[in-house]
Length: 444
Image (cartoon, rainbow, N blue to C red; front, side):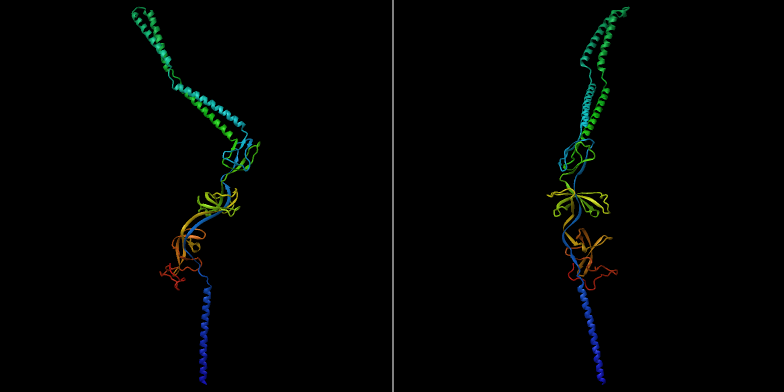
């Protein structure tokens, strides 16, 4: 009886042990299945590969078509309109007369000024002749010859009279004698003849007074010429001419009306350009000469080639918002479209274009703004390694890599998995993953 009881107890013990083991195994199996299920439910890490390709950058902007030249013309003087030579829509050439005022008074003033100039020119010529005659003066040669002959005769007569006088000079009362009287007369004749000859050489005209008269005449001519120019300007102001070739857009006067304010408005012919407002964030990437593609709201499927011709040095004023924009102008290439001023435009400006450069997705790059450094997570044989890179240009999708990577390197997209740092820790030991690496495969 006791043996049967002991056997029964031993059998129950083994049953309990086996049951316990089975429960433990079941629990382990269930936990393993849960772990496998959870592992299978985790998404695979997203990766990208560094590759060699082309990259370009663009900036977009919107605006309107505007003529390169758009002017409002006013008369330079007041008056009554005599003729209006254009209508709205007319095409005109540069210098073509658009409006003419009544110019009767202006023409009369001009005619008087022309007469004054002519008279002043004659006075200058006369004063010049007088001055020249005095500056280059010389005695009359005929008069000099006659005076010299007269002096020679007087000198001979004086010599004869002197000889006769010398013969009787010793006689008493000789001073009252005829020889004495003849000598006195000959002497007087000689003095007169000599004085006449000296006068011919010494009687030079007054050059200074002639020079003053000449300068005065020239000043009078200058004044008359200024008056003539003023009269011509006054006459020119009665005419309004087209400053450039273009199209008339507005005519505000008619014949017989007084010309006040803007009388004609016009735009330049065939010179529309796209005028855009570009955000200050993008303005630093723009340069004159960059190419662009322009589309119009009127013809959204048509593209027109363009080029940056102007970047405003100062932001737009009075925009009414906190957004800072700069005006940018684009020239337009040839097109068959009937473009009109005011049409809405959208433009894509090419800021750079590079070929055969190393590129990676922007999603794989993280930035340390404070340090000014950029990093990527490179997948290696041991796991994921954080690597510093130097970037060049970039657009919305890709960045150029200047150093730190090679073509074919596989990178982890940011946020796909934790980054394992294989650098030294605080103790100087190299950190490595305990499971031998998250990703299998060959090394870099």
